Amino acid sequence: MTRKIDLIVIHCSASINGVSLFTGKLGDADFCTPAQEIDKWHAARGFRRNPNWCERQEPTLAHIGYHFVIYTAGAVLACRHLDEVGAHVHGYNAASIGICMIGTDSYSAEQWYCLKILIENLRKAYPRARVVGHRDLSPDTDGDGIVEPQEWLKTCPGFDVAGWLRGGLQAPAGHIFNSGVLPAGVLPYAPTTGGVKNGGNP
Ligand SMILES: [Zn+2]
Image 1 (spheres, helix red, strand yellow):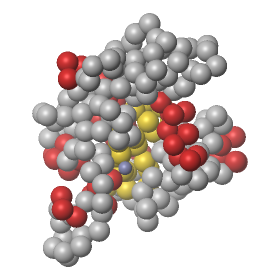
Image 2 (cartoon, rainbow, N blue to C red):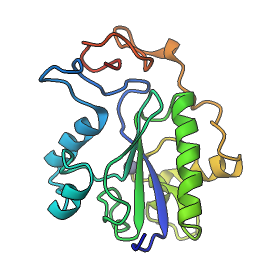
Image 3 (cartoon, protein in one colour):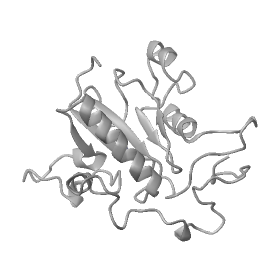
Image 4 (cartoon, rainbow, N blue to C red):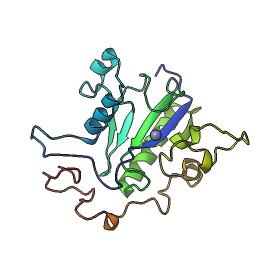
């Protein structure tokens, strides 16, 4: 690792809790993974990876701004290389790593487990880095030293990262996805036979 890392920033995809963002069926032309879906969003926002890095790691993701994406079913996908500057938090990209949880503020037990393991490993690799949520990097407009909810530019990642760290990286109550709360017609994160648009894994 050569890049200096001060911050590890947790984000969310701001998509429906529990919806995997897999579309299509494996092998079909319209099959799309959650990372490919986010890659399209970031392409639309004008993000573009350096071609040299892109060639070296995940060449099919030419735009995605994050270093990792954590899927609803509990997989960690490495996107940008750790030594590659990301595009995920205004003003802090140069010395940070960006992690995106699929969802908005409620994540599956598998996702919470993956986040715990990933953060534990990143803390070993970067012991001096601070772990924060995207919203914690909003400007402290009243200057009291605390970024309060009314100062958040975004709510991302939808949970209190500092509290989660204090709690020993255990899934916080109220933020554990329960498939019983999904909107009608939306499939849960658990693997399905596929072929469904905007919901369910292939
Ligand atoms: Zn964010």
